[in-house]
Length: 300
Image 1 (tube, rainbow, N blue to C red):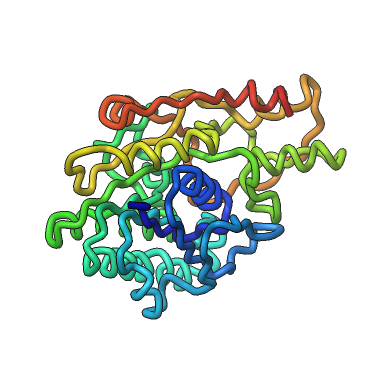
Image 2 (cartoon, rainbow, N blue to C red):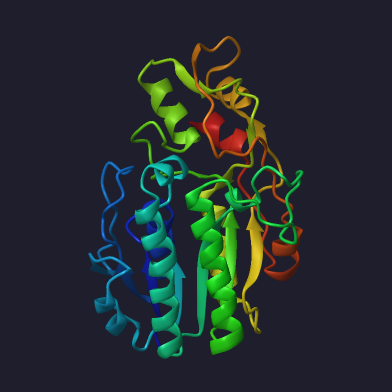
């Protein structure tokens, strides 16, 4: 019998790739996305999926969960800096919306909810490599709401018997990545600036470092979480490569030595360094990152 899956935020960067993969696996896919994200030039769709343009905060989504096997929950106000400008919207979508998704999943006996979370939950107090047993250190309204979503997943597993898996992504990049606006993810932004012949824009000294994870590896982590046998009940997994690069490293790979860049002021709420300890995902999910950032950028 064909599996039935919901992907919230399935018209965006990561979500649309998960939709494509599930379609390839033979699933019936329902997408819930309100098309409110401003970082996309346009929204992605797969002709074999069914789309509902509505918010996860609306009660009218409840009926969509009937007969669903898996829920991939990605819908969120997903940018760090804009969360300072409108924390109420971030809280409403990321906390109340997640509570809605979990409630309807539990009521309809969904087999598993895979929740997309963030490495920004580690903040500044934790030294790299970052592991799942470290305390959270939320620096922004965005990271606070994503950790609140994690905690809701754990509660729904403990109290309502809903199996949930939490995936903390480390700086995802790849095809369809957002490039619009000053807060676009840096890999896509740098590529856009290079194509347009504009100077790169670096925040601060450019020596802050990030663990960059290719979209195909993130999709594979979601699939392995879905297929994993046994109860995981709110377990957290880092989805990162275990290697990091500075912003200076990035522009050197893209353009070579001597690249021209301009400096932007430091931003509040951003970690200095991230690098995943991904040993738990390797051990339990049998997941292994395949794509190396430098190889992908060199092909570009």
